Amino acid sequence: MPQIKSQKKRVITNEKANERNAAKRTRVRNSVKKFRAAVAAGDVELAKKLLPETISLIDRAKSDGVYKDNTASRKVARLSKELHKISEQ
Image (cartoon, rainbow, N blue to C red):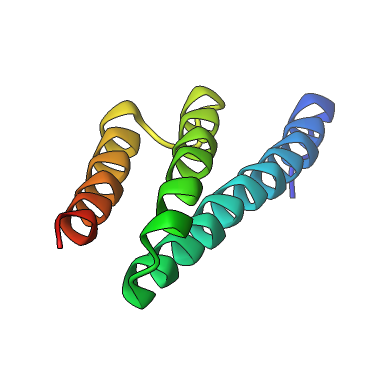
C-alpha cells in the first residue's frame, strides 16, 4: 500500500477509471454480440440497424481512450465485412 498521500489518491482514481473503462468495454462487447447474433440468424434488417449503433459505441470508446485507433478501426472493419457478406446473399 502506498504511504504518500498523492499515491493513495492515484490508487483510488485508477480504480474508478478502471471501472469506467471496463463498463465501456462491456457495452461494446454486448453490442457486438447482439450484432453477430443478428448476422448468424440471417436478419439483415436488424443487422443494418445495429451496425451504426455498434460503430458509435466503438468510436466513443476509442475517443475515451479505451481502444487504440487501429483496434477500433479493425473492429469496425470486421463488423462491416460480416454485414456485407450476409447482405450479398
